[in-house]
Image (cartoon, rainbow, N blue to C red; front, top):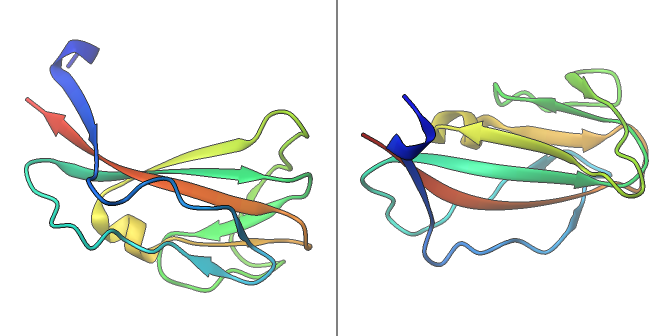
Length: 112
């Protein structure tokens, strides 16, 4: 499949969130809009200067439990693309120390 065969469209009513602190474990809030005709995706942006940990099985991450993400730099955030509603619902993230924030937005991927 090439890029011309895939289209993405934003989810109506689910704009970019305001930055949220990830000092404690954080779960994404899914859009309440009915999403049809494609695969739900979520782009997650982590900003700050400290490492973070995440899980995709619903387990609450801690400073020692979960997949470790490197620290973003002051000018380059960490970006994750989550694909599929089950993965997005189960995603949890926490900063290993205070200071990082997470912002995210949803889109629908149309595959032909």
